[in-house]
Image 1 (tube, rainbow, N blue to C red):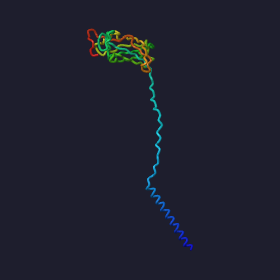
Image 2 (cartoon, helix red, strand yellow):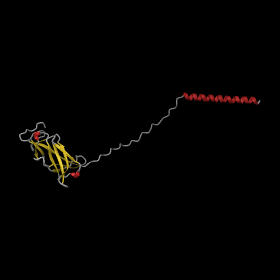
Image 3 (cartoon, one colour):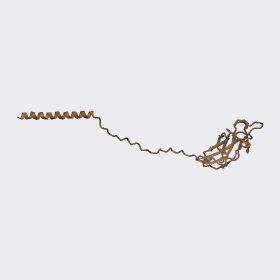
Image 4 (tube, rainbow, N blue to C red):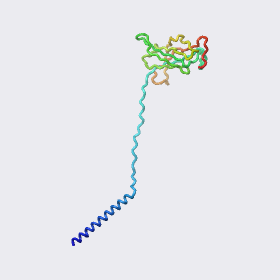
Length: 200
């Protein structure tokens, strides 16, 4: 009697185990066939937007400007000035020389600069300690043409012209500490018997 009961009970356990295993297999197959449920993925946070870092400002160097115009006397070229009876002379060169009195009358600074198409020249002095309106002079240096290369003003090219101070305009570049020009015009003239140049 006992053995029959055990067999029946054992058969029941075996049946339950088979049914449970079958249900697990069915569930596993069903889950594998079904598409995975969509899950919303939040986008990655964008980096914080900071204002662009300004470029480091360049140091402003103080400077002195010396300017002027070189003319060709008595020649009616482009830009002729009837009041002066002279025309601007392009590609001429002028020279700025600053002297010092300590230890003898010696040259502290010398700068040469060429004139543009309007006869205008500009020299820039960055060593302010070497500049003085009273000790700096502007000289004629070279003419671009032998047809107008005789020094006229000054008549001796070894003589310099003193400077006068000009007003610093609001439109001047930053760092300009002073603007100066030659007190009189700088001029070359045709040599005796020479014709005026015709190509300026």
